[in-house]
Length: 381
Image 1: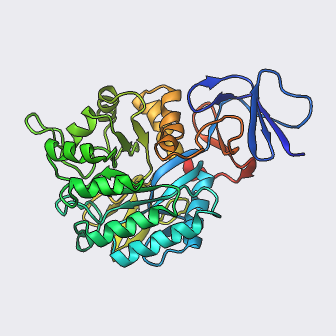
Image 2: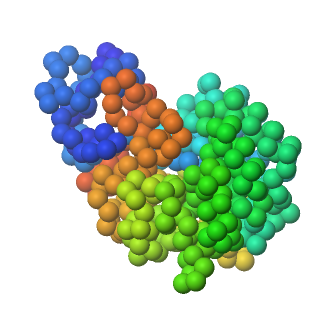
Image 3: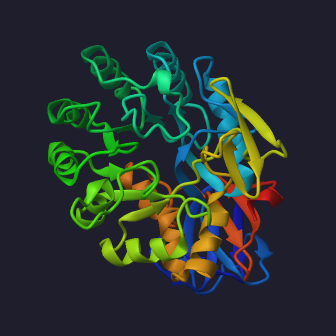
C-alpha cells in the first residue's frame, strides 16, 4: 500500500508545531489531517515530534570520505548516504581549500550527481579564496586570491548545479568580483576573514548574503572595530552556526540570536570524514585530524570541523541554549532550505516525504526519505 499514515506525534511543518495525522502518498506529503483517513498503512509513534528531514549547508565529508580532487558523483552519493541515517536528508557537500584542478573536479562531480543522487542539493566551496591570516584547518598553501579564471569556472558550473555557495574573504576578492558571482546565481558567504566592518559592508553591498560558521575563523567583535562578527550581527545576512558546545559558547549563541533578526541564523554540522563512523582520526591535506571529546582537532589543537550531526545541534539548541523547539527545528530545516531555494525542509502537500522523528528528549528515533524508512545511526543522538 502506497499510503502511509503517521499518528501519535506532534508535527513541525517548517514554521509551527501542529497536531493531527501526517499522510504520505507515493513518497510525497499528502496532508496533515485532524482525522486520519480510513485507508492506508498506519504507524502510531510514541509521542515526540515529526519534523522535515534536516538540511545541512556545510558538510565536508562523511562515511570515511572527504571531498577532494578525486571526488566523483559516486563520492558525493556516499557522503549523502552517510548523513541520511543521522537525520540529514538534504545537504551541500563541501570542499575546503584545494587546488584549482581539485575545485574543477568537484564541480564536475556535483553536476554529474545533481540529477541522480538522493539528498544532493548542490555544492559549497569553502575557499580557497580566504584570508591567509585566518586559515583554521585549511591548508595554508592552498589559500589564494580569486582570479578571472576562477570566476569563469564558478559561473559556468553554477548553470549545472541546483545551488552553489562560495565562502571567501574580502582580502581575497574585490566587491566587483563578488558582484559577478552573485549575478551568476552563486551565493557568496564571507568566512575565514580578518576583515574590518567597512570591508565586510562593502562585500555585503556587492551581494554577499551569508556568513560561514559565525564567530569561528573571523575577526571578532571589538569595542572600536566591530570586525566581521559585528557586521554579521548588524546586517540582514544569514549566518551559519556550529552548535556543539565546542565552537561557540551557549551565552555567545544567545547574544547572537538576540542581535539577529528572526530566522537569520541556521545550523550547520561542518562535518568531516568521521561522520557516521567510529573512526578516531583521519588525514586532511597530509595532516592528522584527531577525534576526541566530541571535537576534531589538528595535532596542534586547532579545531578542524565539527564532530556533530544536525540532530545533536537541534537538541543542544533546545536543551542547552534554551530556544523554542520551533526555532531550533527551523534553523536546521526550513531556513537553510529557503536560503538555497530548495523545495525541502518543510512538511506541505506535494513536497518529498523526507522526515525525521524525535522522541520527547529530542533524540532521533526514525528517518524517512521519500516515504521509505532509513536505518538510523545512534551516533546522531
